[in-house]
Length: 634
Image 1 (cartoon, rainbow, N blue to C red):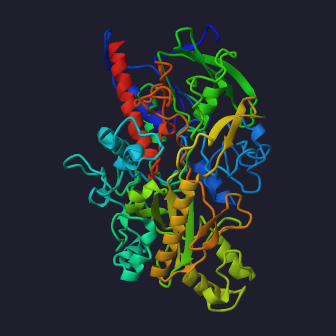
Image 2: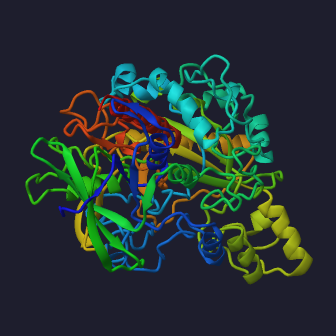
Image 3: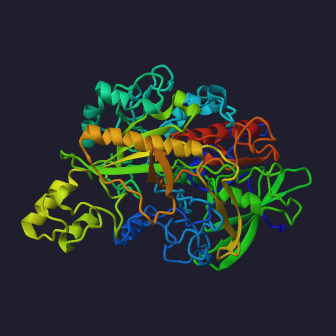
């Protein structure tokens, strides 16, 4: 490490949700210290580009992209080979996922593909959907409650509840307490979300009306779910979301553009650049295009500095290097980039396993929420493509006695029709439109049963307009986010393949346990019940070319199933009370290095079924509060 290192109180690696929230909390007001009041000097190292003056460039990228995939608006260019990118990021392709010459992740040795992706730029993964359901109390105690060989969290729902409320205020969550008081979820007396719920879509209302009362036969057909009482209905509840239902903190209300993934064109959806700007306005310093390359540890087992590499262009090369010293170090890079940095930090082979990794647990227990996607055609028009991607969900099956045998799931109702499910250039409605112009059937809709015309109809004029208006207005999507069990064989390690800065890229080994596959199978069976009740024509299928496909015997028949990535990267540096079985404590402080914090969803011991953002945000705020207390005592 050079002698002329940058010096500060706190250095944070990563400027996503956790990093930005902690940066704001530590920099926005003076704190009392033994030497009097002062503001903490906070520096944030961001591997990607910094905060843009506006999102116009991202919007142009999105408009021009043929495939509107989650990564399409954001740098670096998807056409670049990963070895030629300074701060690469993943983008999943079923054709190239095992080829590290074409894919950022090295998955040559993976049984199944890890399909989730993320960004590396100021603000982190901006393509998130914006949903903010809390974990339910039993998610924190799977071993205690269900006697499963999973680790319990070192904290309870009740411990985290006030931090959930603080996080919901910071992100600006729209929701309804009555809608979300289920599965043991409680709130402080008199609590209300910062904004009222987003109104339900026509599809939400139709599903709620249809599923509100089951016949005896329909109830019997759901016995496979293993609920504590017979299922006589399914309740559709509004989803809490960090999306404005009314103006909030100088941001506009949602206008229903249905492009939450990948980008909200009016920024009604929260993204961490909002908090990051508040942090820098309070004095925090953001160093962009600055890639942390090694964490240094001194003879007293305290972190003594971080080395970094700088660059200017997407493709590199390296333009400089440096180091930074602080009193407290926070790694907030995400569930893959954080273990990557820890594992790279061997300190000249003095720490061969990497920093904070004497147990060998860093990088292990990689989890996601495998998504079982289903889609179909309703007998009535529900007019999708209006409103956010998801406004309502069926959450009551996220917990129950069945968790002793199989994974739970949470069901989301999509307002984007088939745009995320249909293959072909650009997704739907583009694919269906081109089908009916050219007389082909990539979407599956251009058949005589569905279109009431003929197979592979080629249409023009009024007939084209009327046919598309009739069919697309009846499309719908339902997704099941399935709980994934922790497994040490699912892991992040270092690849021999490198990026443009010469740093090893992440190597991923991933599979799905039988426990989770049984959850996906239960989702498939419930999908059949729901579609029958809706009177829907089912178009759900697993493509022969899908590398995530697996066979499952359901009702005596072999069914080919698959899953999608949820973008929820979790579990790779888990928290716990025992340093022998965990990497950090309940405040996300390293067990091994007293001045090192590893934050984000990588600390989750188990994942439940809830989107992780509000939980990782609550944990980040709790961590920031502890760090402030530490500085008061220094």
